[in-house]
Length: 476
Ligand code: V1D
Ligand code: CA
Image (tube, rainbow, N blue to C red; front, side):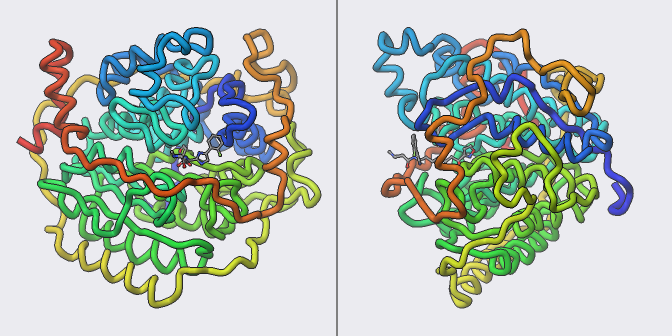
């Protein structure tokens, strides 16, 4: 793909997604996806996007990574029956961080459907860039929910991309370590994972600079541990040289970008100090390499800033400038008193001093020097495609203002009425620097949780045993 040619950008959005509700005191608000959608529509970006409604991911798609038992549990558990399944709730880490809520399984299928559907579009060469702001739930493990994530749509989308792409680069700028994705691909060179995150006494506790992958995957996991208060300039000084070297040495055929917005200044759970422009600069930089790209959401808990950031980043991907004055939109009251797209980061201290940044950068660049340029992967039969997405752009996804009338999802069951509740009030506080995270918890680095194990499980279970992925072939 030529760099300066206009990119064909697809955007996945499910109108029901904003109705799923983790609970009053829970910081994860799917409503932020609806706010983002409404803002970008009112900026007129629908004129430049191909908009699709995702087909829900199927059960057999979810079990390409997750265990059958875990998916069965997610399918059956409800707020009403959860008290009869206390042992399983504990076993699958479903509880405070990952609560059972109405429509949980549909929610998982909906955000995952967008990510897998996006991968299929990239595989078919139908789009250069695909966006799914509802995706990016990077903490989910094979048989365990974690950090607000139940199904790992990223792993599933990468597995889909791996049918047609030899090397896939995963980049994660969420403030939290992308542990679930790293763990899934820790022992393979078919996927390189790169996570930038706060490290030290912070959820999930993994992501040390020393963690670089294992076996065939050694040097193909990359971790950039950061301290509180990192600003745009410091972040760019790490991100650009590291990613330039990654592109030189690894030469990926496709990129998956997790654009978690909790790395923005003032995030309710975060402690970084990035502006929207600083955050978006990372995404813009990766587009300059002209590779097929899947762009996903992730964390982000000051929801007015999440909507601002992802609307702006949608504009960046389309090469459309957005005015700083916000257009009228359904959620305008969230954006006062300034009613502007951009905000100024705080004056918090940047604990990432020059020497620290240099040390981290040099260590990572040295590791990248050690990898043999562009590992060759044997490519045999291409497995069958995942779900067929609806090929037609979906006019239903344009809201009142964009299509002139009719309320989205009006007749469907509403799980939440869209009112701002008390805990949402937290989101209205200006750029405060708060972390609710408890002391770090290290997850075990278990090779058996990776992709190789999925193949064995499928084989043993008598299901999909003939569906070896190119990932498996590369390792044999
Ligand atoms: F503050 C809360 C209120 C209610 C429920 C949970 C929280 C909360 C805040 N921070 N939970 C956390 C983090 N959990 C812990 C647990 C305590 N320990 C036993 C573990 O510190 C989880 C933070 C998850 C961040 C998710 C994410 O932003 O990375 C994300 N990315 O994609 C989707 C989500
Ligand atoms: Ca990260």
